[in-house]
Length: 406
Image 1 (cartoon, helix red, strand yellow):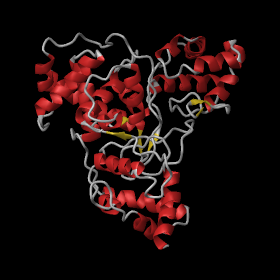
Image 2 (image 1 turned 180 degrees about the vertical axis):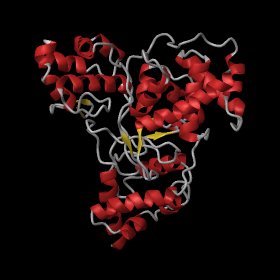
Image 3 (image 1 turned 30 degrees about the vertical axis):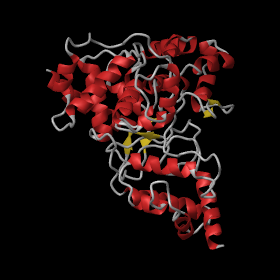
């Protein structure tokens, strides 16, 4: 009877945890953002949540500042940090990704990928998470307390033997890497019924690999662009591999067109979402024109279940004050704002009119790019960090890499 009660307690606990929302990494030196204020995301469980990545229009040709190197393999060998091992393995995976994604293998693009890998995993294919069992149990304990379920009952339920021969509790106690954590939750989801967990529960681990890529992004990408490798398992398992992590990370970082003046803003987008830097500059312009105090977080709309929510975002509310000057209806503005995750937003009437008005008011061209202001949160963060911090840190690594190229 006690065991049944324990399993029921676990069912309540993990049933609430088993949302399909993406999960941010806890292993990396660099933290990952929590959803900005306008994003409508579920409450974080284990570990904190990130907004889902969105696939915008994929480029049909490379977009890079310089031609590809005459010998990319030789160049990449020069660019990789000295400590990287196995060098041939990382080099082959990076060049394989560039070739499959039709990305220009020049020093700028190669260094951009190298800088993100360094920041996110220091070139660990399956990053080690110091103190991971403590972090996981702490989060489970917090959630259990919220449902008045004693942590002891939850641990009793997890004494069941798992597919690898160890109990689920033993596996949590010995967790070292995020890959192991992903496999643990995959097994728990597969055995949901025997564990008395909700049938159809989702694996809550939603990002991983050496570049900390969203599983949701990867699954969407393979529907839009052919995956070049023979899969050993699911798309999820590829994200947690070296080659898959590098491939999908290179895609989300570089395989979309921008008109940024610096790679710095791609790094901010990598953390905050595609076109967040462009959208943040747009928000700054809207705020100044309307006299509204807007947080430039790069999210122009609120979303619910992947679609724009009926409740207006703060950016929409500020734009409503400018309808007369813009000569656009609410419907016209919403139509254009729905393009916020695509390159084409810059050609929309709303974007053009707002930026022209801002230029006129300032008496010169206002910035078309800005670092999004988003606070980063993670169990490992003890000081105030932001998306701007992340982008600048990666950019520092990027500049170091370019020095090696010279």
